[in-house]
Amino acid sequence: LWFGLVQLQGGPCGVLASVQAHVLAQLMSGGRVNTAPGAAQQQAALVGALSEALWGVRPGGTGAACVALPPQHGGRSSELSHEEVIRGITCVRCESRAALDEALRASLGVYMEPGGWGVVLLLLGVLLTRGVHVVRSDMDEPGNALMGMHGYCTQEMVNLLLAGRACSNVFDGDRSLDGSLLKGVPAPCRLGLLTVFEWYKYMEVGRHLKCPELPIWVVCSESHFTVLFAEDVSRVAPQPPFDLLYYDELANQDAVIRLSVSTDPQGGWTARVGDSFGDRGKCEGQNIPPLECVIETRWPGVKVDWNGAEPIL
Image 1 (cartoon, one colour):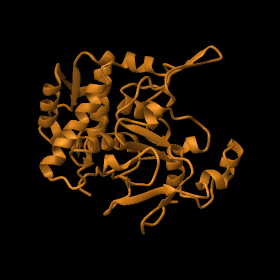
Image 2 (cartoon, rainbow, N blue to C red):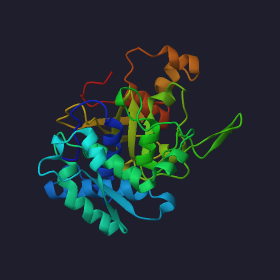
Image 3 (cartoon, rainbow, N blue to C red):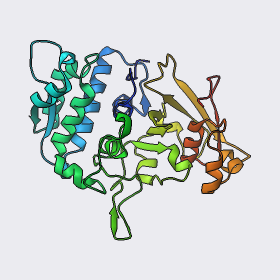
Image 4 (cartoon, rainbow, N blue to C red):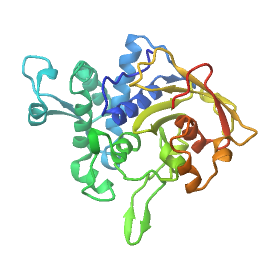
């Protein structure tokens, strides 16, 4: 699939899915996503995606962005250890978006190097651009992290790449709870996020992420981040029917999965399972495709046709 990033092993799915969402936005023209870009379009889309992520995290939308590069050592960056990369990192400071794009074009080979440090370099660039102290202040607690158990991305990391701020929650704005300030997404987003944890009533995704400017969503389901998007913007209405495309960068997909979403006269899984916390909990472990539940967090009471693809359980 010419539009898709490929994940070779577990761990960085939150970063890759977020960048993939930015890539799809870059491939959108005239209200349609180009799912068959040529090599030049691929590289331009990746440069634009990385640029959008870095430029979007600048504090207050002002200041320079930083492109992180590994130390020069006369060989491939993949030969460097993690400690060597961290200790020898260099930063290209870019005062304008044009300068940022140019710096990323010049270093794209380093970011795309197989077995290299592209994901780490992007995150270091994001941290250098926003500032570690600002990232800490974005979070509910300064001791929160961007990386969780097993090397997985935390919600803060995904929010940083999608919303430009490492907030700890996915609801709209900030909330006060027993004297503590819980920090959510401050403003409407260009790209969105949907999660199966909302289906299970563990969290609430606000409209800033649920209803983004573009119909492109990072999906959190079963400890993995993937992407759901509309190929044709004009055909995604507030109510179905319409088609969505699903891409999992870790699944070695050789064909896009097209999901046809329509109104279910029976009310979808929402009606069949129930709407309470207890009802939703009872359906864990049953043969219900989690992605269908994720879609119902945005469009309750629909049914999903997988159009011949095997439903993902």
